[in-house]
Every structure is written in C-alpha cells, then in structure tokens.
Image: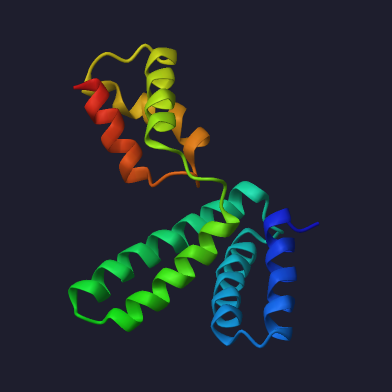
Length: 149
C-alpha cells in the first residue's frame, strides 16, 4: 500500500491534469519520478518517512537552484523553482519554528548529556528523527553548534 504522501500526490496529479495546469503536472511528475527511483532502489514501496526523505532532498535541490538562478540573473527560472519548492513543501510535514527547533535541540542535548562540541554527533543522532523533513539540517546543525559552544 503506497504511503499517504504518494497517494495524495497521485490524486493531486489527476486534479492538475484535468485542470490543465501544465507547470504543476510537470512538477508532480518530476517528484513522482524521484519517488519511483527510490522505490526501485529499495525494491519495495516507500514508507512515509522514506518519501519525506526523498521530498526533503528535492526541496534542498530547489533551494540551491533558486540561489544559483538568482545569482546568475535568471529570475524567471528562479520563480519556477520557487513554485516547485512550494509544491514540495505542501507534502512535507509543517516546518519547525525557530523556537520549536531550539527547544528540540535543548531536549536532545539533555537526553544525551552533551556538554562539548565533541558531542555533536550524539546530539544530531538523537535529533534527526524528530526534525527530518521539518527543517533544513543545516539549520539544525548550526543550532546544535551554537548551544554546545
């Protein structure tokens, strides 16, 4: 049985096709392709956490593309990537606020008794399952470094 994220994406694709929203159809097909590649690699259907991992990777790629297009003076491509990023984010869990992230970091530090920057790996291991797909891991890493310094 497909993950609820993939099921919702399939339904949204049908709606977009009927509405003749070509950009959305193309973006959804691209995402479905990335999910299908992962399924082929694993030789089984994806679970929701695995689908979130794939979508998080796709979101990160879009952020990097937006940055590159904006630096390169190509605002129309950046706008396309921004629209795709918004679509991807609609399938991901709600993003963490800065305050929520800091609270989770503090909890993780306390749970593993971390005191120095050398303990960062243990903190990240405890924190990753709680924040995956809800926050950029670069932000998580920066927050942990700040707390442990």
